[in-house]
Length: 247
Ligand code: APR
Image 1 (cartoon, rainbow, N blue to C red):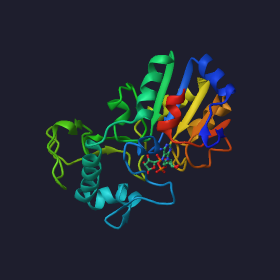
Image 2 (tube, rainbow, N blue to C red):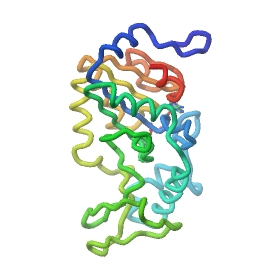
Image 3 (cartoon, helix red, strand yellow):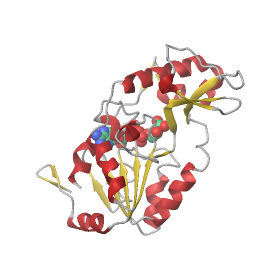
Image 4 (cartoon, rainbow, N blue to C red):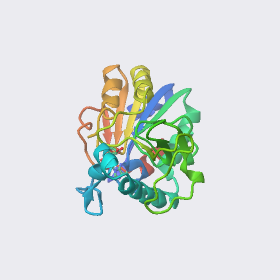
């Protein structure tokens, strides 16, 4: 709740936070916004790349039509993120991993900033832009050790075919088993936070609903209201980097 424009954590939520053992957190692009990573939506704007809406350049169709263009987009995102550090929200969540006996961090983000802040075993629903995988044999590669030049497409050293970003593109399935693990945790958690997502992309946005239906106390943290705000037990309208450290 807001008091004189100050975010105040309710007594109810403080108590539940103090008593909780099983906690799930779902994050979206908003958790990286204060680090300088542009969100895709929110604030009335929608990301565009060379005049193309982001969901077109980040699509399975574009991957088939123009792999080099897709690489150029992800090379740009990677170079942007390379210069960026995790913020107070990422660090707070890394601390929660040590605080709660059963803590699950699920992210839609592909920027790797949770891991850079010290979070481990992050469930990456949409992959990670620091990895590539072979379009044919599926072999994965860490791009941190590959010199990435503008629009150069990578070749698999195992089978000689093209690599693609190891990121889930629009029109593609989520990586096998990751969402299923998140659902199991959502079904058994006591407290579920949803932080910095417009809650427009499924199946990720279903997680807080699944947790709520299983009896968890659900809390949204976002400066803006989303389709989840009324479904959550509490909707805290504030920035992740300002609200999460309050716990
Ligand atoms: N703290 C918390 N939330 C914030 C902040 C902040 N500092 N700044 C912005 N937000 C909120 C916005 O109000 C918006 O609701 O973060 C949300 C960002 O929404 P999107 O850009 O739609 O990002 P996300 O929900 O993660 O998108 C889901 O869609 O584009 C695909 O695959 C991509 O993973 C992404 C998925």
